[in-house]
Length: 261
Image (cartoon, rainbow, N blue to C red; front, side, top):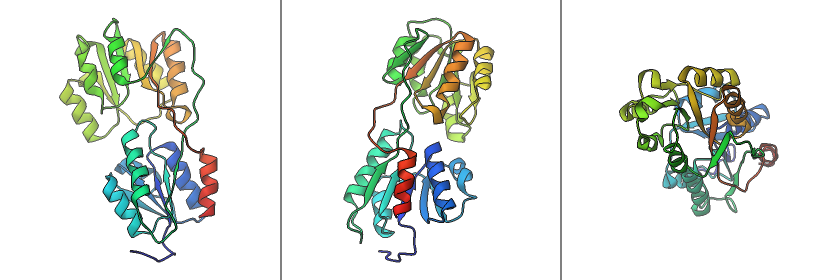
């Protein structure tokens, strides 16, 4: 086990705007830390930063536990996506099981503030993608989907989905390959990296003649406000998959914790 205290004692699981901000903060204050990102794109956003060591690629729970122990990590910051529930559970469990030279591994979840939910009839809130699909099955008109590629297969349950549905996914090979496999291709597939400005959302809604715009409740950092404004301007119904309530700390509070370590 590594006991060299000159090595970083902080591990940030990033992949969100919050994770990037925390990495930038640590770099700015010359605080050495490890930053774990799942993709090369995530790496490209922070590879210019000093004092950080970037880990690229997804780790399972055992790999997380092993890394924490081998590097004597004292503070683990979970700044992963609010919908990545399984990843969060793995990080939390790895921290509970890890045995280091420190008294304990301190885990903190960095959470996004919740926006006030609108009572507008043009906004439909659901608890899951499956629930959104069940709602959309009873509708007519085109659908612009911006909930990612992992659950895109659920939308194939919608009658005539190849004509009605348009998917916007990340501009990564796995996301595009999966979308095409499901039948989303040509003018029905947009591979882009967000978050997006209101006008770009609006342009896509108009180009696809979408009556419905499906998105996750990503908060301000995920461009939710810009999506809502675009839907209103286009006269489209915004179908929102609500994110789970979480207990955690704000970016500002986590920054204070970083300074302590």
